[in-house]
Image 1 (cartoon, rainbow, N blue to C red):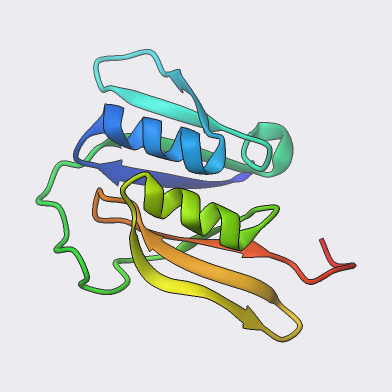
Image 2: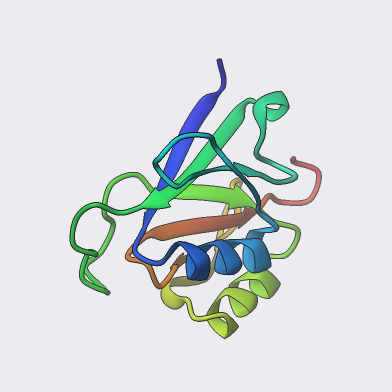
Length: 128
């Protein structure tokens, strides 16, 4: 069984569009009464060892700028600076500008406009 993450959001359509634009997510609505979407992308899917889902948050949205709220998911991207700029242009807020971490890669955090933080990373050359 692959590892699984879930993104709890206040506005499903806005969040789906945001993550589709920034991280290339596609969605499949799961059967049942609850509006739950299974997430797929180049890095997410049953065959990739990581699955994800998105659904309506059932509690108040965390305050913007309140720091990490639970685990921070970090997704690999081709170019952190480009993805960071794309996220900001699509309504994200800065949580950590692109920063180099020796031996790890170049990382950035953004707030998705739904109360969630997520990270992006481009590994150093020669490391995938």
